[in-house]
View 1 (cartoon, rainbow, N blue to C red):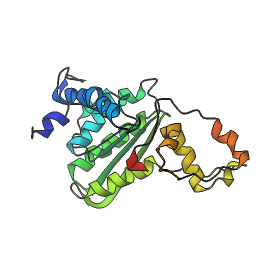
View 2 (cartoon, rainbow, N blue to C red):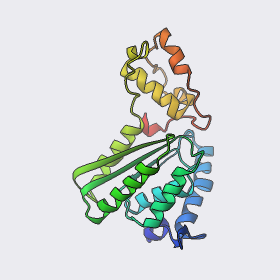
View 3 (tube, rainbow, N blue to C red):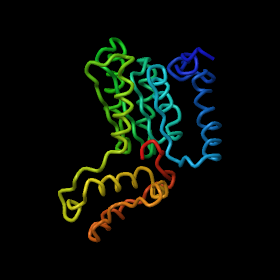
View 4 (tube, helix red, strand yellow):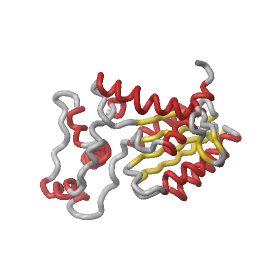
Length: 232
């Protein structure tokens, strides 16, 4: 199939997603058939990231609107659809109680004409609707076109997903190194299974004993098992 717009862009019935559009069926296939098969056959861990550019960027946003539980992180670059109905449905999903911890990155170049306008509208919608459980980041890339923005934006999205916690002004948290703050953030986001993903022989820097209560306050969600190899 070469008609990627058919599989990536949602169809609507009035103000709602169409019940049997191709984009919805493609999302169901990825979430309910493909990923479970991959996770059963290969040691990929349980942290799911969906990333897409252009039509696939719009697909990423409609996946968050339709199936927010299917992935833990969403990276949407230069989404090609600025449809008001998709924005409204995304806002409704974000406002729904019980979304859970999710990460969303939205990126666009400044030489993308209408796409930059649509992406800015999505950014405003997300800013107004984002719950505390959603970690949301937006990046604008000067001098980048629709074709050139991808490498910088994908890199930046993954970089932000793995960023360390900011330094704490309180004792004893202020004595944590950047590596230790990153470890804390990754344990919280990706789960304790992150340790099992380390290359053999690699160890983390020991934590000062006084900082252990700080790190032990937060128990990671059991769904967050391990980090994807690409982030390591």
